[in-house]
Image 1 (tube, protein in one colour):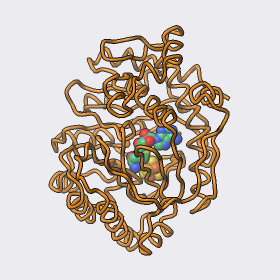
Image 2 (cartoon, rainbow, N blue to C red):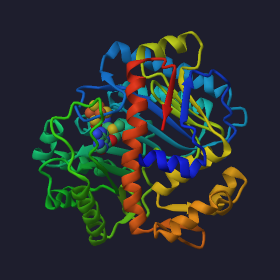
Image 3 (cartoon, rainbow, N blue to C red):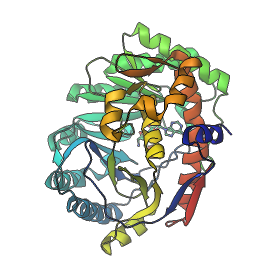
Length: 415
Ligand SMILES: C[S@@+](CC[C@H](N)C(=O)[O-])C[C@H]1O[C@@H](n2cnc3c(N)ncnc32)[C@H](O)[C@@H]1O
Ligand code: SF4
């Protein structure tokens, strides 16, 4: 309902967003800001709450997967004619550290094909965090880490279906290893979690050495295996408002709707990129005029690459307006809309293309004007939190559910 109304309002069209199958056209990588994402779809145990694309770790499959990744990187590299600078590199999963031995070959392939001067970031399951692994990661070039702690408390981890790990020890270890950014992922809004529990998790993360804390509202995906449901809207609202107050006490600022950070540390943010290219099974790519998703099937991904084909399973072609809308959505997540960045990307004025919507946003008290563009108000931040959850339920859940079931879906319509 919410997504339907917003789609009508912002696209000014009754048409749904439609992903169509495959599309092997060449990628136009000649864009001003290009990020890289590499997906490692392996985990030791599969957490019941987790919606991401992953399979049980298998060493020989991981080695074959690495070979396919290298080929995909070289295939894309051959299209990178102008060798534009890469503005970010993220390794996510899954649990990328399970491929520790293979990561350096993957990074070398990326550096051989792209001009990388940015930070290089990796997501870590706390189970994989130890001094030796952290040192290896640093030595091969990673300088930002994100630890999926979820909660420091045994009772909260139990609700999520995770075994207890001493998270404090892991964050301290990462801090001692001297990464530029240490993000800690927390989930809030699980059954039995009160304000004090969340405050405790949040302050513990910063006190243990985190430079950033990402606090995600617990979402029950339709294909997840959660034993207990997330707290209701009102409880989540209270917790989110409480987090904002606590962050003030800790002298850290809100850097996005669900993230808070220490000043000066580079931000860990893999989704809020203007353009990015994704490598690996289920990795997504966002370019000037389309968004595409690689096949979710690890076997099909490997087969496809070995047949010298691009492993795209689904493509959403943008109009100028829907592409700008994508920008608007993810930039709103970072709380700020910058006129200059918009102009740079779209060769048009933000205030011109979204004149009506921005006026409405100001009238409703959701955004305010700043000297560089617009920023979300407190009310706007809360509404965005609701919209993002609705979008996750309506769009992401549906797309990922189908893509997990079928390696090459025919079409997906999003209303
Ligand atoms: C790709 S995941 C996992 C990273 C890492 N493999 C780990 O488990 O620690 C990134 C983050 O998404 C968040 N997340 C996963 N499932 C979620 C859910 N159902 N609801 C809210 N947040 C979720 C978690 O905080 C998680 O750390
Ligand atoms: S939360 Fe992390 S470890 Fe658990 S299944 Fe998801 S990606 Fe794997």
